[in-house]
Length: 68
Image (cartoon, rainbow, N blue to C red; front, side, top):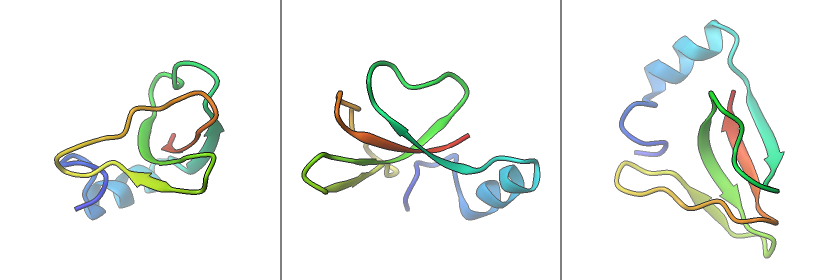
């Protein structure tokens, strides 16, 4: 399961119906408040997903893929 235990397929659909969108955000500091991290893209192109058991730590230079 990607995106942790709270972001199931049904929950993603519910949030999308309420106006949430997938956005990208260059990591230059803390992530914006009120968003859920889905993936990080490292500068070398590696894709690091948030999973049921773990989430990557954003680092300056990454691109965050967020549900906002």
